[in-house]
Length: 199
Image (cartoon, rainbow, N blue to C red; front, top):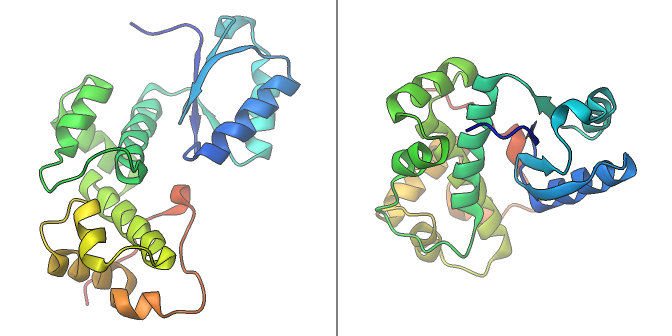
């Protein structure tokens, strides 16, 4: 059942995003019941909120209010993937089934949401998952606290060669080459897009 007091917000993909949105809502005197990645549950029904002011302040901070049902589904899919990949509390193994996680989150058949995602995002869910995993691998490599083998396990890869192959395909360099770079080539989570070409 659709909740009448939940706003769905695009590009809200990290804890800092939550903090910014919470502060901006407080400035508008909008009471918040709960807030999480991509969602704000308000104390008042949506029809009683200053929606135009909310839209403006969100856009000023790089966010966007999602009013289209299909776009909301896409954001929930992304949120599920990002949370799973970046949450260190989740125990990982190669058996993580993203299709089941996504089906449970959006309460829709995977075949439907997979087609919807591809049509609106121009990449598949599987490609989005790989891109997010590689961005997370970049982050972990830069920290320098884990071996490549530990990173592969943490991200649910069946082997180090599997991770290494995907890493080189996406970035054009090996994990070791990336680790030795003096500059940071990581991208914000919300700007990760498919850019690989057949080599």
